[in-house]
Image (cartoon, rainbow over all chains, first blue to last red; front, side):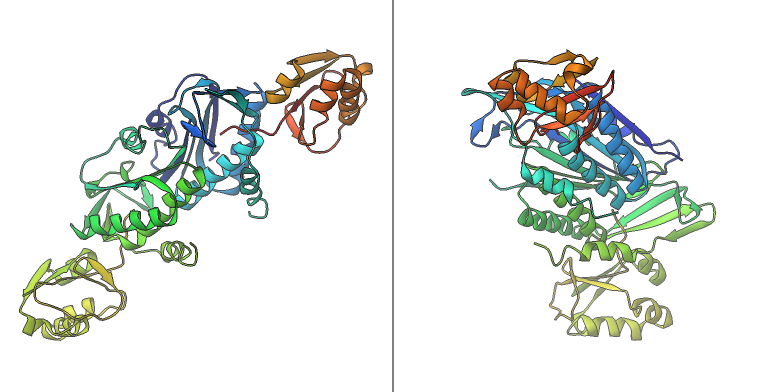
Length: 156
Length: 156
Length: 84
Length: 84
């Protein structure tokens, strides 16, 4: 059976329970679900953050995330994988991104979920701008994110 | 600040949204939450499973899981970590276990969550018995679970 | 007195959840306790409790090595765990 | 015609979201397009679009190498991504 892969890019918040439920097929073949939820932090590099603005490239965003999900499903026995990513203006404490993967076994669910997050960070066209008391500035990409994504290259 | 660690062993089902919310401190220091949810599968080693019975060792169960959470918080900058594990009679598709870890950064959340699951599988005193049309039998421990837990030994 | 608990498949094989033993009947350490239970209670106990993969816990902590027993201790014997 | 998009910090530095260019103005490939935009539009464009870390996408796929341009293509220039 083909894995079920879904991508949503939206301004509105999301309900993690509803999302996780959507990963469970009715035949109870799912043994485990691994998820990651990213949140807006109130502090970033010594600065207080008043809000975060997320820009993206409509069209390419959805395509690139779907390509990441397909690559994860080619590497591990994924039953279902889903990404929800918010755009627009977000306040500290708000949910930014949710990645969920269901599989018969936990090792595949964990690996695929972490792989998707690492690739999302380096391949999906989103850009963060932080607004604070000291004005606003674009967030710089982190070398550590590129390194985390690179470590999957040698592996199958 | 000391990490917040919590363990629940219970017969009743749990709400993953409420659990995840409990990992978020109000100061918005959380950058990410990694979770794993285990489910009862309808099939196991070619057998149909009618239900799963989970036995445990009251007292030692809670102590041993708390020790695992403490070890994870010593290895990674965990803000909060929580395990809920069900016992008693469970039907296919039901939730068995939930592990959630919050941290400022995703790598710590992912690593701690996977570490906790691997150790839970090999160090927490639970025993599964499957009931099916062919009678009932105790589930055998898997060598692969012991190997997954062992791989954390060399690492800090 | 010593409290001895059995779990999972082992509990069913022995037909026994728990025992209370005097320190004299138990023995001085975990190895002696396990040997005494195997020898004093017949073939079923010898086979089930003598299995190579039986895990021991002393006062609710798994112990890989032998350990001395003291009055009031709680000992448990069980097969490899299968939770999660 | 070619559609050219700019995102994030680069979009702000250029003060430009998107352009429509004739194929003659664009050039035959990505390298020519980028060089033409840098040279034809003044110092601000040369500095911002000439930065070493600028990423290019052709028809909504990131491309690391140079690539030929065709009528109707969509090209995007942007800084390293910071989502997730």
